[in-house]
Length: 120
Image (cartoon, rainbow, N blue to C red; front, side, top):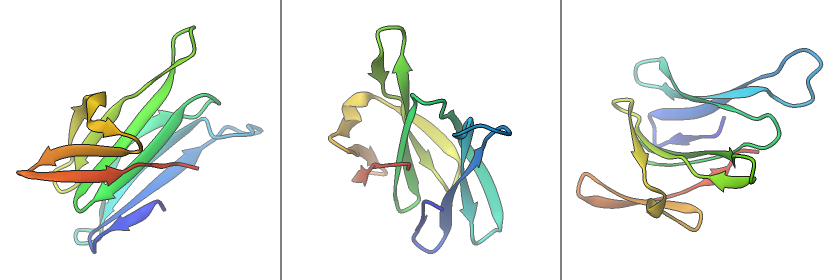
């Protein structure tokens, strides 16, 4: 479990690995709605020794960075997303919305600052 958002959402990861593997082959990020008892798959991401992942929440919003090694040059690419957990609606964010280790985005007329925490 990664954490709870208020009294409604629980965010967690399921990891999958093949027999004899030293590390997970893939992880799946879920949100569980305590009011309805439903879970929602938010995204899957690989972990084959070179991909990175971080997430953070603010109220009903979840931000995550699904980054990995880009091309042969070995540069890191950022793929930042914001999900409204109440609707399941994802929005791809420009990397300019990331400052340091936090996402800064206006949603519903207010500024949300969502600190991103690496998934260990």
